[in-house]
Length: 192
Length: 192
DNA sequence: ACCTGAACACCGTTCAAGT
DNA sequence: ACCTGAACACCGTTCAAGT
Image (tube, rainbow over all chains, first blue to last red; front, top):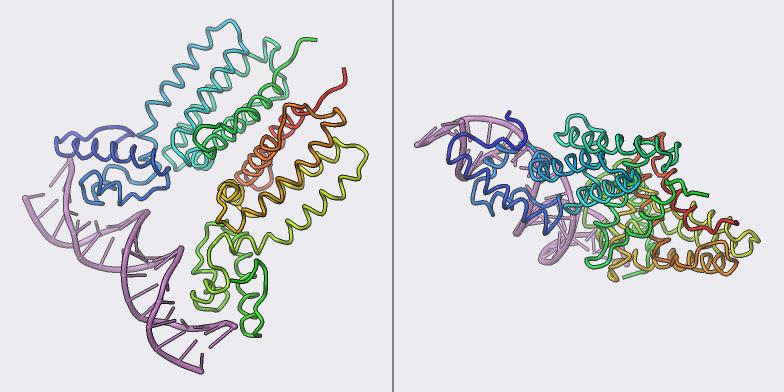
């Protein structure tokens, strides 16, 4: 089995691989990550066996689609480590992480499950996110701008629940905004 | 179509109705609200048509099962209106509402959807919860112990996301605790 | 009034047969 | 190396036929 996002070597395989990803992205954007895989194969113009050949399960397909976004997120985390305002750095990461975790409807739930499932190809992705956040969190705590009793799991939890709220919001509004801001505010140390 | 929770008049119908509810409760507790309805019918020892006769859709079945818990919750809300400590009253309601909203895995998501879907038999249930919270919220705000810029939707959102977090937690731990406390703290007015 | 179960449409997943 | 699609097991939902 090849690595995630690795394209086949033969031209026909590569063509099908790309067509499947295009169809899957469209389907996930429209109907969420739970949508029919058979319909994706049909949209891509290939047999269902071809989908399973390239993507042995649903999580694998999701992982391939969000790989780029994850790389952007971890790159952002590295950049933010250079920012002087450590609270602002953490805030920006959290915002980006929430956006990433609700790329598709149902993704927050999927990430929540695969975070604890080592067999999922998304497991490593989750831990990359988690680890990126921890560096920024520790740096903010070292500067005394974030409460010491907050840990990485609290942050991860907060990011996922905000993403879930945003996913379940009606298009237009974003129900997560206020609750997210309150939780983040609660984590910060306010000067007396 | 009878009302939610209304038991059939004929003895055989009543027996099947009860057996279905027992089987459904066990199945939902074990596997969440998305579990197979066919398996529930089989467990109850009736044909699938009998399940659909008594419960025309999945939400109807869920609604019948959580009806008692909802009545307890709204009764609690009325009692809490008498409590002098208006912040404590709101807190207790929120705790109970979160517990109610994660009776089964997947229920938070279901409630989130049916809150905006007037055709769902759960729609009225959601609004009962929502309305109960608003009275307590307004009372707390009138006493100056909760911020004025918080509204019922914010509270509802917070309750649902906490329930979702608790549902997705591993048994034993409760990931929602810290984030929920932070959000609630953020809503309250702290004396100078 | 209530029950049964066949019927239909759909889906996930595997795998033997092909090129 | 890759593709196809039949095959299997499963599910939601409806409805004609029964008692």
